[in-house]
Length: 193
Image (cartoon, rainbow, N blue to C red; front, side, top):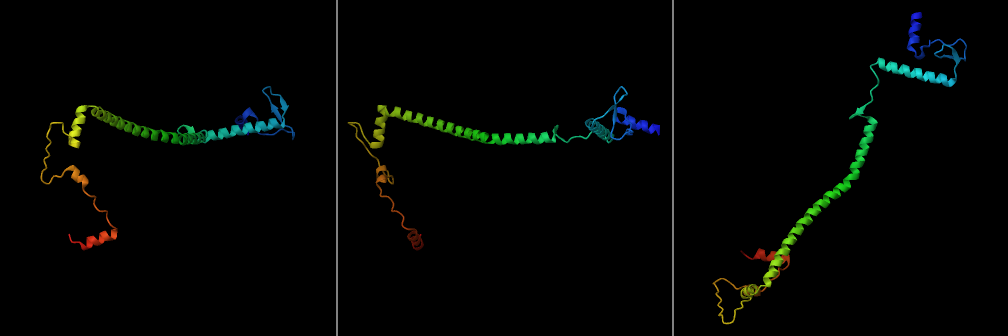
C-alpha cells in the first residue's frame, strides 16, 4: 500500500499525495520549506489547471507523442489558407493591369508596323516628287500619256488588228444596269445558251 501511495505522489506535480486535508473547507500548500500555508481559491484553481495540463501532457506522451498539427507545404492549415487568400487577391489585382499591358504591347507592335509602311510610302512619294521636278521625266510622260511630240518630229501611230486604243476603251458606253431579279431570272430561263 505504501508503494502505491509513493507512486501516486511521485506522479503528481509537487509530490503531493491524493488524500485531502483533515479539515473540510481548508486546504494547505507545502512550500519547499515543509511548512503548510492556507490556500486561496484562486491558488487552488491555478493548481488544478496546472495539474490537469501536466496530466494531459503525460497522457499524450504515453499515446505516441504530442498531437501533430496538420501542415501544408510546411505551414499550418490556417496559415496556408491565409496565404492562399493573399495569393488569390494578388492574382486578381494583377490580372487587369497585366491584360492591359499585353494588349498595349500588341497595339504597339501594330502601330510600329504601320509606321514602317507609312515611312516606305513617304519614301516612294518623295522619289515621285523628285521625278516630277526632272524635265526629262516630264517630257517622257507627256509623250507616253498625251502623245505629244517635239517640234519638227512626225508622229506615227501603229494600230494592230484587234488592238484598241486606250481612249476607245474609255469611250465605250457603260454596260446596262441589271434589271430586277425576276426579269434576269426570266431571261436566263427563256434565252438559250
